[in-house]
Length: 203
Image 1 (spheres, rainbow, N blue to C red):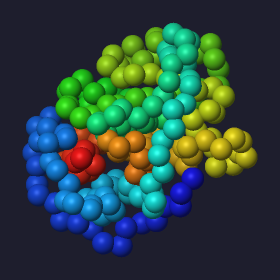
Image 2 (cartoon, rainbow, N blue to C red):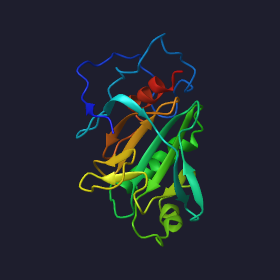
Image 3 (cartoon, rainbow, N blue to C red):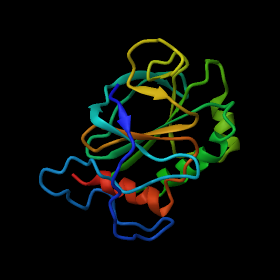
Image 4 (cartoon, rainbow, N blue to C red):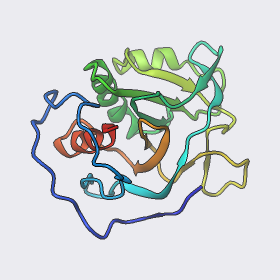
C-alpha cells in the first residue's frame, strides 16, 4: 500500500453548482502530462481527502453480492469509482449510505459508486437493513473475511484497502488507480465533493 501525505498546496478550482447540477463527469480533458497530484480540497470538520503518492492500480477482488453469489469488485473502465466501506454496526454509515445512493441514482456519466459491507456475520440481513434506509441503487458487496480491506490493527493478507476509519471511502480513477481516500462520514454531493469527482473524471 503506498504511503499518503497531506497536500501542501491547494488548487483553486472553478465554482460549480451544488446539489445535483454539475458538469457531466468525463467531459473535461486533463492537460497533457497531468499526474493528478494536486486535486481540489475536499474536507469535513474532522477529515480531509488523503492523496496516495504514487497511486497503485486497484486489483480485481472476488467478493460476494447481497445474494451471496460470487461477484468481482473491480474498477469501472472509463469511470471514476467510489468504493465505500460500511457495516450495520456503524452509526455514521446510516447517514452516508443514503447520500451515496442518491449520488448513484443521479445517473452521473462517468461515475460508479459501490458499497462494501465488512460485517463479519455472513448471515446478516443486509437487504432489509438497506431497505430500511431507503437504499436501492447502490451495488452492494459482502466482505466478511477481509479480502478487500483490513483493519490497521490486523496483520492479514496483502489487500488493497485499509480501514483507517469507519465509514471510509476510496476514490479509484477512470484508469483504475486508487487516488486516495476520505475517512469518516462525508458528503460527496457537496460542491467540494463534486469538484473532486470532476477532477478525477478527466481522461
